[in-house]
Image (tube, rainbow, N blue to C red; front, side, top):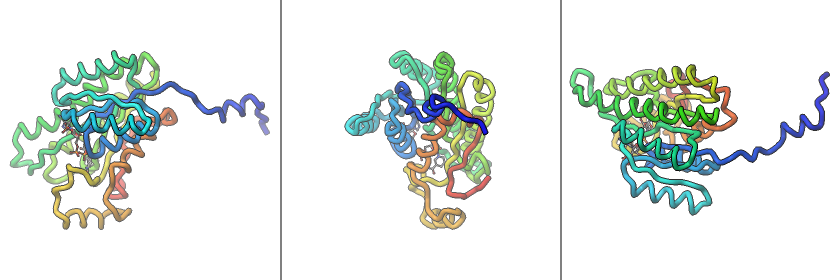
Length: 262
Ligand code: NDP
């Protein structure tokens, strides 16, 4: 039997007083991104809230600050690669660091493939996939300096199992898996992880317009008989972006109430 010294034991139970980590969350103005931002603020992160609409971001920053958390706002369009790069660089310059990025901003332009226009396809790729690459590439330089980073992309079960009417969206979300696995291999030696959290059906503005019959069918197909909430996704993001998750990388984690079990 190996006996551990009292000092070794004390180190294992020592409460970490680590510095405040800075987290950028895109698409934080509503829905899943808002829930992620609130959760990361609760986890003690300084949260940089990004989306196109400044008003809701400022309201959210005020909510976080009033609750004792720390947040700031950067209004940008993630579909504009140059504005996005400049925005991320601005965050790094202001805070001197960027530890966590959550690429959550996303859109749908659903249509059956035979009717889908080139614009519908490329716009979804640009907003949902290219933006994640631009953010990760810009942030990785700052993360490498600190030998710590957590890149989290919000994918979708559509990207794992496909979905009729979503060839553009499923391709973009599957692309995030390839992006994160490659980033994981390139950056793992520098203490940087990259993972996809793939939600199933979550109640937000994005899914609000779907008819009740479709929602009922989805619930019937799930192991856990309820639609997901933003907080369900935020809890998973909280873990994969934590210091504790340093051995978890290159994964696509479906948080879908057992809808796909892919
Ligand atoms: P919402 O439509 O409710 O919110 C989308 C968010 O993205 C908003 O904050 C919006 O802010 C932001 N956004 C959209 N386009 C841009 C842009 N060009 N630049 C900056 N921000 C942008 O969506 P959800 O919360 O439902 O979805 C969040 C993520 O989760 C998306 O990536 C989505 O694909 C994914 N997902 C959602 C599922 C669901 O069931 N809801 C299932 C699987 C995945 P603003 O308009 O202010 O710019």
